[in-house]
Image 1 (cartoon, rainbow, N blue to C red):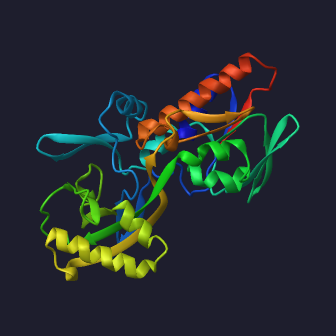
Image 2 (image 1 turned 135 degrees about the vertical axis):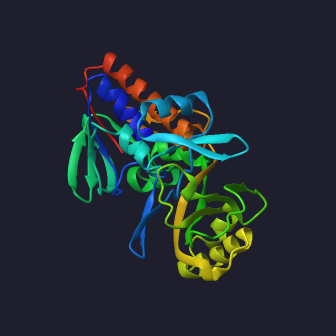
Image 3 (image 1 turned 90 degrees about the vertical axis):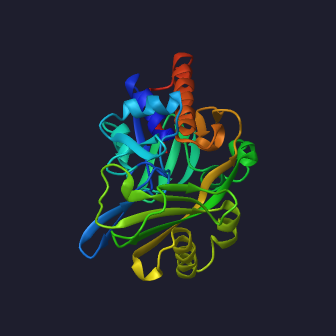
Length: 312
């Protein structure tokens, strides 16, 4: 989301920008997973669950109009979500941008007045580079001793193990969402209650506590998945025999625990940013990217660099 925000602002100002994303779809942790169960296509929002209630989040929703709707979660409480999945929001926001998907950036090295970007799809160059990977992933790209890597060390990101489960459609649902900071499954949500989702099954997303996730992020995934299924069935008072599908996502850097308190880091014509700079929400990531774009545009006004940039 930081890269999209940055690229949108730069392109609006007339700057040539290319976004490079290692994923099959753009959006990072604003993600949706598809699964086929007995011929029915179902989805799970296995990353970011919704847009928070704030003016900044409302502004993002307005930019993504047509790809968002209201999710009623009970007691006249609602949240804004992407439709037909959370991944629809970054896809809509990135419409019209030059995006290279399925492309992993391996290194970014300064070569004279330009940057050389090594990817698994070949080399490319740019006058300005923005890197928006999670803070712990900066070192392999920029090098352990790079100033930006050193400055980013105070940002703390925690893992998050996420279970995606589907039960028979007639399975009782005791709640739409449940948040319990003291439970192993700190967040549980009935995904099929979100607008635009299939109701062929009762689908659930459950996110584990950061401490539990950290202790099990490298454990056998099949074993961890079934342990989380048992915990979910217990929380829902549902018999495990009603389970029709289960999947597991391990977000190694899924949650921002400590952010830098500044919108980005920079050195020369290189910037780094993301939610780890400003805070844990979508709007924090967006604010970081927008601030980077403003900084780049300022550098264009005060230098003779060509108007091109790469956001990753």
